[in-house]
Amino acid sequence: MRKRLLAVVLAAAMAVCLMACGGSSSGSAASTGEGSGAAGGEGIRLLNGKPEIDTQLKKLAAKYEEETGNVVSVETIGGDTNASDELKKMYQADNMPDIFVIEANQAANWDGLLADLTGEAWTEDTDYELVDEKMGTIGFPYTVEATALAYNAEILEKAGVDPASLTSPAAWQKAVETLDSKKDELGLTAVFGWCAEPANLGWSSGTHVFAQYLDAGLAQDDTTYIDLLNDGGKIDEARMKDFAAFVGMMNKYSDPALLIDGTYDNQVAGFAAGKYAFVTQGNWINGGVTGSPDYTGWAMGFAPYAFEDGIDTIIAGPPSFWTVYSDGDVDAAKAFLQWVSDDSAQEILVNEAGLISPFKDCGFVAADPFAESIKSYMDAGKTSGWHTMLKKDGLQNKTCQVFADYAKGALDEDAFVKTMGQVISSYYNN
Image (cartoon, rainbow, N blue to C red; front, side):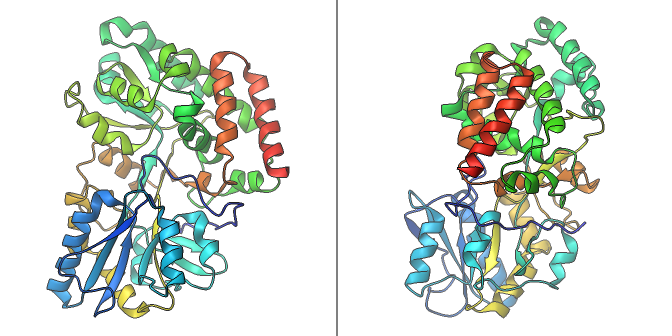
């Protein structure tokens, strides 16, 4: 199914930067790929927003030159300057790269300045291209990231819980009660490592956990609940109530210390140490888990937030996209992107950069411990969209407080639904 993300004009024109996704993170200076040509010389320029893959992208550029004779200069944003701010400076200086990175809800800021990639061969090999109703296909997906309930497969196996069965509230309740009854023998502190502390992890509850209400169980291109949200801050109360019941279960079976006063580091460290069977994060925690001295090599995967019967998807998609500047060398940029979608480039991006490929024909699987689980959902067409990134900017700073009050017991289930509706409506209409 072809993904159609609808770009929206947000008040501040910036999405909340995913803490762990690092998509269009920041930088104070550009790092140019060695042997990749000068900015004003031959070849094309690519502005990368993920500093952690700078080395691999430079290798990618070198491989492209080796195979085609064409030059790509990789410039990476790193340090303390926001990538969007850097792009504004480049535009004002008439120094735009041919390919640059944006998040989905930043597309409207570049209206008229992005090349239409509709009809490119690679678009037939992915469900994750960025499509705008007005501008056409404008975003090339270079990786997929996912969020759902991450699980420790070893713990679930010992408890006799099959993660594939967790597709209804009843199945979840049974599994959670089983795990809770075996906490001592399993070495668990709690079933869930869930933190609703708004100052440290408001980005997680207000963006990623809230995202489950918006998209869990939906097809990639289904924008039902984000459209409702962006239509004056409306919610579906019945769906929100089901979601509230599921979050209430997480509150009940979570580590109280983590739930109220924890941090991201506490959450990831506890999961790595086998203290929690599940955590409310995405595959960006993989390095923190596998790099922990307490991690013993167990497998991990994702289970859906099945707050309604039949929910069997995880949220997965690109944290950001590569776009082509319409006044740059469009043909050369298109040729490079087509090459990136094929095996030579995918081998580097997957095997060396550790990215999860968005392309169906890719035969490589990343070393990311979540990769196999994510790919199984992708192959089965069981992924929902990242539409949380299209909500009104700053909303997460309000909804996270509602999650916190619910976790503290200041709100019950019905009050959570009522308050969430009031907070969202107020934010959209004031």
